[in-house]
Image (tube, rainbow, N blue to C red; front, side, top):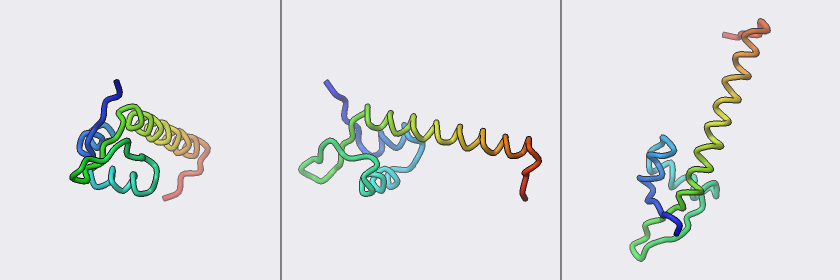
Length: 77
């Protein structure tokens, strides 16, 4: 059975604030799996984790690129 998370729960996993989770949903980057009668959006844990992993990979790649530029003497201030 899939686990559904609130924006606050998803935010903790992603390392962002709940408002950013709602923004990601509005942008289509993290579609809600369900919406409660009261309008609360719920997100699949698997989707949240995939986005968290992708964001982490992107950060690592950016750090490697920055380090490579520094090693090549391309350090700009």
